[in-house]
Image 1: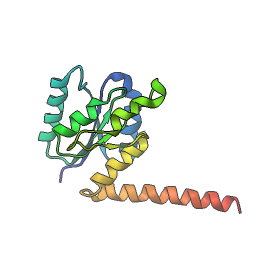
Image 2 (image 1 turned 90 degrees about the vertical axis):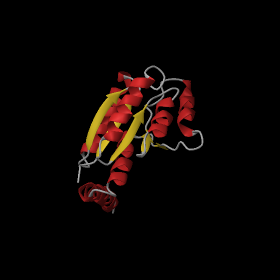
Image 3 (image 1 turned 120 degrees about the vertical axis):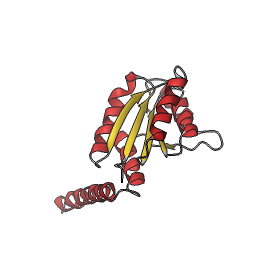
Length: 159
């Protein structure tokens, strides 16, 4: 079987730091993370070409879209692919976070998940891809076990 991957599509290189956090977390689950730049607003043909390239790739995959302000990238991606899409917009830099609303409501038939924390976006991608890859599933289980053990240790330290 082909090793699953996570395609991280950012609206601009300004989102690179946020995307690198997602990519690093993906690697912790044994997932290949592929970083690409395309804008649904400024370069729709380029974005569509990237999506068609990865849709033709037989590997199991999840797309993570990273776009702030008017997040058309997530809906555009979800409408063009058959694999799951996770929107993980960067922290808002203005508007008191009001730009998050462009990620919350999508038209009928467009259903990207919305996860705000980069590590959690990687975790959701790993849980999805763990359905078809036992190694990824084992890495998720091990991560959950470590998190639980830390809570138990923290509780014990207070006794």
